Structures are given as structure tokens and as C-alpha cells.
Length: 173
Image (cartoon, rainbow, N blue to C red):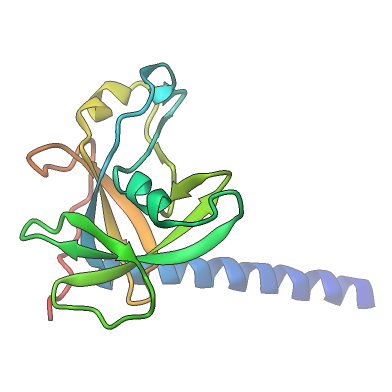
């Protein structure tokens, strides 16, 4: 009997944790600021692997150049400046300085010498890979803590690629 209650409580706890994660992601999509990160070219032989596209960002090299030790794992933040179209330009690695107007903090991870934002892959429906070959930017929603969530890939003209559900714009302050 005690074992049965333990299983029920464990199941409820797991469902609770999963639902909180989903709720946080939905909240970020709903309220996060839109930021576009420019994609860097990826070796075409590994660009399309199954049902996902490997992603790399042009900003990653600039961040690596400012880090003194790229052999260790680092979780940090960078400061970016946004242009009129919400495209991010690297300003520097965050040193807890105040942000200027039009600047945001973005979380990044350094693993095995590679700088990564949120995800390094974009998954799509099987057989639709050619739609994403013109991708120029990753469209992210960013929370106040710098947490990023990739929502779309967009082309040079900033049009979302593939089947997308329209996102409501985040309230601008």
C-alpha cells in the first residue's frame, strides 16, 4: 500500500514538473522580446541530417575570441544591441554593466570549444528540408533573464520559413 502511494506521488510530481516547464516556455513565447540571431554557414554535408538542420551563429566566433579559456564549460551571458528589425549585434561578454537603450542580455553556453545559444538544431517535418535552406536568421523569444527560445527560422527578408503559427508581438517598452 505504501509503495502504491509512492508511485502515485512520484507520478504527480513528474507531471507537475513537466507542466511547469511547458508553462514557462509558453509564457516566454507570449511575453519574450523578439531577437534575430544571424546564422553562420554550416558544412553542407552535415546541414541536413534526417529531420533537423544543424545551426551555428555568426556571433559565436566573436564570443569565443573574447573568452580566455575555451577548453572549459561556461554558462554566461553576452550583451547584444538590436537594430530596427530586431537583429542582434554582439557588443561584448557581460560584465554585469548596465544596459544601454536597445541592448539585451542573452544566455550562452560554451561546450567543447563551441558557443551555443538555446539550441544548435532546428527540427522540421520529414521531407521539408529544402524549405529551410534559405534560412538566414534564427528568431528567438528572450526573457528578462536572457533565456532564449528558438521559435522560427527566417530568410533574408525576415519572412518566417515553413508552416508557422503567427506569434503575437511582445509588448515593447
